[in-house]
Length: 328
Image 1 (spheres, rainbow, N blue to C red):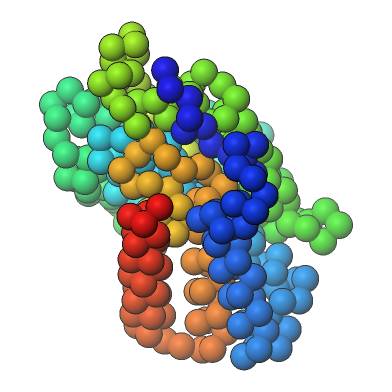
Image 2 (cartoon, rainbow, N blue to C red):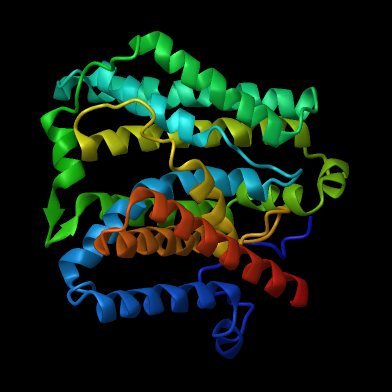
């Protein structure tokens, strides 16, 4: 199987000079320019504490984007519009299982991702075997998940984060938030899995040419079902970490994460057609989006203005990326 689509941090197949003009490098330049722009209009924007704050807020989107990355890389026009809803129910279920008690953390860590896994597997089965288009199936699943959340909570979520989890959400080591350190660990693990393992090679192979993968003995349909399941589990787990930050559950906390999780991939240079890109690109996209939102919040713009501005900027960035992809 062709292994040319392996993910890279700084590729050993690309010369340093070429990397300087790569899509991934351009994403890093965009982050730097955004922080410089933020400092110009809002002195103190690039202070260490504020940068850490922006990065901590990027963590939750970054976790969701990991699952979205796997789905998109698997090809077949893969996309998951249910991740925001699964994140929301992850928050609600985590609070319910935890109920403010540290002793309940193992139970929450087991059952919350399991529920997300189940929702993801259902979507994957329908997409792979019934051949429902991913965008339609996952949008329908989002409604199912939201309805399930309402049935479970009756509109009023119960429970809260225990002290240890709140420490994870707000604590620091050498002034670096725990959440950022956990995200760095996740980035390392995800990059290793995608680049160095057989499963990662299969993911890129299936995404770039599913027919060749099938002829090579890969059960493509079953593989994609598994990928959607993983995406659901990751989204639910993101809900648990979001609860560590908020402390208290709220309905629809994940509603604003679905579209940014997709946009972050496009901005970070991941091909939405599948089979090309890496999680580091998604990470840069998440940081770009969070920084943009931070600038708008600091300027005291209204929610409506922020939504319109971010929407327009996302459109420009995605169009720019699409144009680069066609030229390259």
